[in-house]
Image (cartoon, rainbow, N blue to C red; front, top):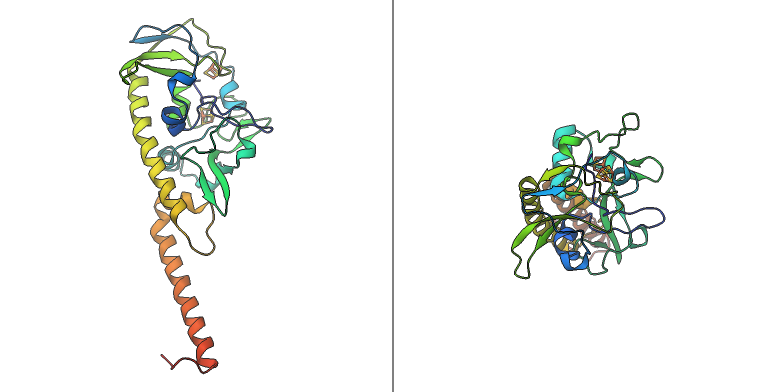
Length: 252
Ligand code: SF4
Ligand code: SF4
């Protein structure tokens, strides 16, 4: 199976290379990567041999759209399969990566849960195949491919990332058109992801938790906002009662 990019994290930290879609397009621009020989523009020589490296040793950083798709197609609670990792748990992600969620001075990155021994939360332990193959994150679909662009950003084709752990078997042919479509979608998602993160980071309210980010993009933000407004009203009422008791305020 084509799994995640090496964008991943381990315990102890492992290079994250380019797992996060926003990192794929922004944080790890192509010039940071050494490449294998450039293939023809319409195909890449590659065949997955199902070694499971990408689903076992690599932590996947899904986009909010990946999370929503997984929820829709599996019916699962996002908190069953997501976790938030700190910089100490991820290597090679820039400090100023725009995908960091920041809460009380601590940074967090949204990731698929992963067990050090058994791998990705969605890796079927019997079949050793992805249990959500049709819903898997974009980055899993792109692994281990790397887009090639010229200095003006013009699309040239795809190669294989050299510095990821995939054995990169070259005994098959993979058409690049579907990869390019994924790449374009990934780029759009990456920009929207950063906007969501910026919005989340700018919010300040009592009891804010990093999990609220998921609530925000899974449609629960209105509910969250209502809860917060309710909390604020209750606080105001409590303060007013306290003032009344102290003889500072008139009864409402
Ligand atoms: S979601 Fe599926 S393809 Fe992606 S890392 Fe997990 S098991 Fe592998
Ligand atoms: S690391 Fe490469 S060969 Fe191994 S399962 Fe992933 S894509 Fe296939």
